[in-house]
Amino acid sequence: MSKIEEIVNALEDKINRVLLKMEEVNQTNSKLKQELNKSRQEFLAQQETIVTWEEKYEALKIANTMLGSDENKRETKLKINTLVREIDHCIAQLSE
Image: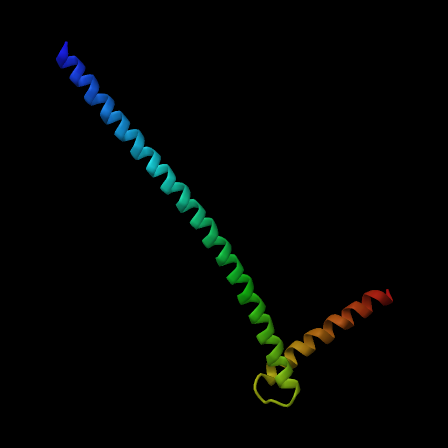
């Protein structure tokens, strides 16, 4: 009988160690999930910042062109032509 008791005790010890290890893994997993969520939020915030800065950059390029800068003149003219066409289209729709 003592041999069976030793086996049962050894098995209980191994089960306890596995349960402790599983708890550690679960805690680590939870921490990693939190870090991942935080990183995703930071990434989204950075994406929004990039979009904002790109819009500001485009507006600045147009403003510089209108102030007499020769750079990007063609691009600005194209944008102005597009806006004029859109306005003409709106006027035509209102006239109908």
